[in-house]
Picture 1 (cartoon, rainbow, N blue to C red):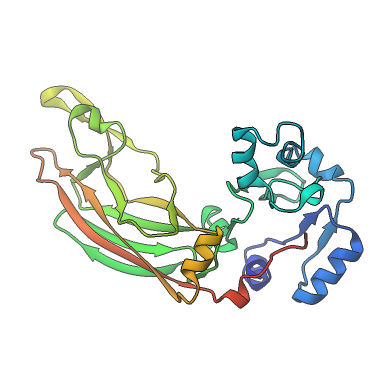
Picture 2 (picture 1 turned 60 degrees about the vertical axis):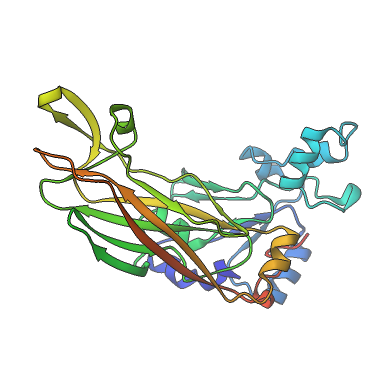
Length: 295
């Protein structure tokens, strides 16, 4: 299991790990023994803690209720319920996710999923918390206007994994690139786009904070990037039955795309540029992708 494999890295960053489940102590003990899990598995029979944190999966009740055939209920059921179990779908389970809690018991971050078969990787969480010590580098390069470096949260992922691709950009001195909002002034937005990759889902590109550039001749105040900045792209490996079948035997996932941008200095704007990029990540074999928790 991915979390078990990352315990040493978590400890080095000052973090511990524990999982909470509505399963009984006996079920969790058996599961831990079969999976060689050494971090605590906490039994929350009756879902008392799950309810207290506000993450009780209420879709389960709807899935077996009088409105179970309603199209909206069926759509939610497909995302948040292990279908096919009748009344044993898992009443009392939480929505899948991770809380980061400090030593005072205060929740400082949370990571939740859009599909019950998906899970955020531990390395992605570490990257988002700024605690990843050695991100997986992919490519370095430069253009007339900037230099860049690509890296990713994980070297290897499994089916259903949510991981992060990063593009670190350093504008050349005196150059600026355009941030969200600049397109309203007619400038080309800095964008990271990807070629279609079957069974890989790209979430919304995340931009850092920008700064306003005042272009005095036109009295424009435009959002730009003038200092080094990083674009973050979350990717989810499909976890549907179709994805399992299509990815069976696949060992490496290759994601190709491009960085599109327009750079300007204090005197002129340069022609838009498109830079080809790629990332590769290993796909764990099926025997390492089995159920992450007992049902």
